[in-house]
Image 1 (cartoon, one colour):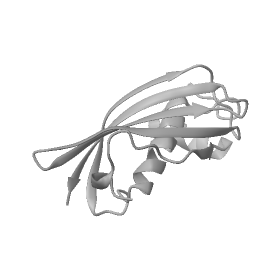
Image 2 (cartoon, helix red, strand yellow; image 1 turned 45 degrees about the vertical axis):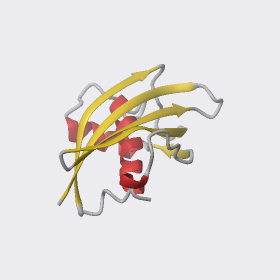
Image 3 (spheres, helix red, strand yellow; image 1 turned 90 degrees about the vertical axis):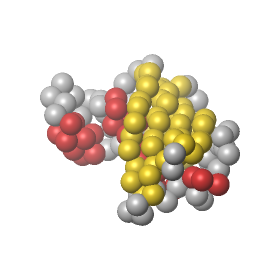
Length: 131
C-alpha cells in the first residue's frame, strides 16, 4: 500500500491496540510527562502516537526512504485509557494531496473500547518528502 496511490476517503482495516504499563511508562519518560501514573492510565497522547505510527508503518513510510513530519494534531478524549486495555482503531485517510513535491495527508482515527464506546478521536496531518 502506497500513500500516493490512496484516495481521500480510503478506510483502513480496523486494528486492535493494546498499550502495556511498560509502554505507557516509557512514553511518559520519553516526553517528560511526570503527571502520568502508568499503572493507572496511559498518557493520552501515547494512544494517538501508537495509532498513527501503525498507519505510517502500513503505508511504508517508516522504512527510511521518505522523510515524514508529524505536522499537526487534534485529539479529544472521552475517558482515560488503562494499561492493557484493548482498543480498536478505525482510521480513514481524510485528505491526500501533493503540493510542490510534498505530500500532505490527514489521517482521522477513532479509538473504540471493547463495549463499542468511543474512547478518543484524533486527526493527524503528516507531511511526506521523498528523500
